[in-house]
Image (cartoon, rainbow, N blue to C red; front, side):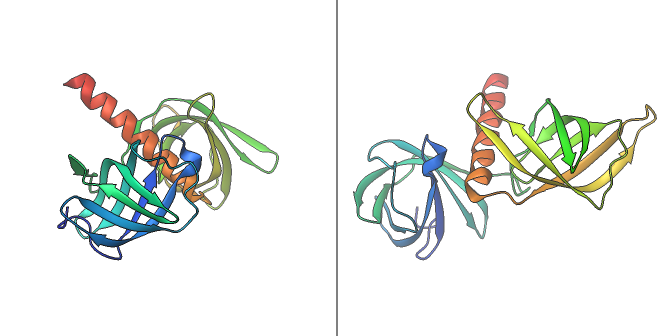
Length: 198
């Protein structure tokens, strides 16, 4: 683990309940794991429960699963993960995501169909000629319990022969919790797809 995690590195921890996502600074690394000091009170974090961990490193975006061995005030000890992976060179995992949604700007409502999704943004198609200067409100329903609400900014617009526009855009005003929720959601879906193929 020493070559992956270094002292003072910032690591995000995502338990099964996304609302309790936390982050911390690595204090020291040993052969068995590492200790970190959490930024927020460790509410909802439980020892011996598998969590997801993410961290930016010089080699890319590191992802691994592990569990908390010990928890004392804001200091937690994380067991060495059995395996890890670096996410794609693209900053966030992108998945196929087909849903009918709406982009809203003041009183304007535009019907769109999503094509793919990542924690950074999404690709959509629509018949409407959207204004690249505007920021649109969007609500993305991931499940019955989870909905991400944020603003969507157009980056690239292409008009097809069928009269539909294909648009790539990015999310802005995403909270850290929502961003990690999307990262988690896309990672899980991506792994499900890989496992199905395998």
